[in-house]
Length: 477
Image 1 (cartoon, one colour):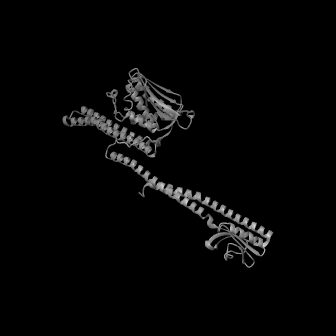
Image 2: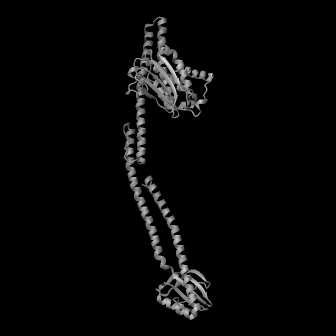
């Protein structure tokens, strides 16, 4: 319990409250003490002046009679009065003799005096000289002792109440936190044992633990999604690798058994090489996706003209479009400067154009457009008039190795859009799918570069560099 953070925090607040209370009471006590002292001194000086005036007006006998009358009228020990002659012989007052610890020098003193039946009391006295006579006027300090005692009792009671309340609040808070933490512990224990669908309990009140629970639940959902994704990818890899490896084994086994003539043998070897290339392409695509997911490719970010990059990609695919009699068009608002990896962006654009060429019908149309938006981003889109994608599949086509019904008879392993989605995510975006009826429009949004796109006047060597990037990217893929 002593190591409880809630209790430690509560005790810390108690200590802070006590410190604040003491800091408030200290100047209050000082001000009260100074005010009372000044008031008492002023009263003593006024009494001394009044007696001195009586002495000057009526002489020593008149002052003696006045003091005796005051002593008889007052409450016992309310005032301390003493008038002596030059030899300190008492003439009037309620002190039997001049106190030995009180000097004859005029001034104010705090001393202990003998008050007969009252015993020894601490008093504040004022000494005055009236010619050869000496006058002592004082007041017992014990008159204000009950007020001081009540002040200290009140301060002690406030500290006690604050300490007890802080301790109780700390214990209650500790119990409430332990209840919430125990539920979190049970959930985490269930997740450790493999129940990834378990979630932390949340409440309607939006306190700190509830916010933490919601954040952890979001993390758990992402972890569950990633684990299922890994499982699906593993199954898909096993499924997609089985076919080329089985074909490769069948070719080699057939060659070993029948020993065909050289021409057929070399043809089978070419087929085996194609199967191996297919396996290598799958692993290359997975490695690129792994690099992109890890963020390792951000080191290749440079300022580039995305419109020039898209124009080079369109130019590269123009011959393939002509073979299918497809109108491949390019639209742009002019140079558009963005910050990104030119190789990855070229590969993403190539995958989108390649998909459009696969599904666009003969005599169809494909449009690649680059435009600047008012929110400070550039949008690159590829549109076609093919069969499109059903709404139920739009969230699945970016999954790795996923192949929809429309792509069953086309070549590929289902990594093209996954790669485009990973490139878009690396550039702070995501794929956007929209229907054209007929056809599909796929768009990627990229933040503009800080440099002004108006300053991008593309010289011939930049265009050549862009073509080289596109060509090298397509060759590697």
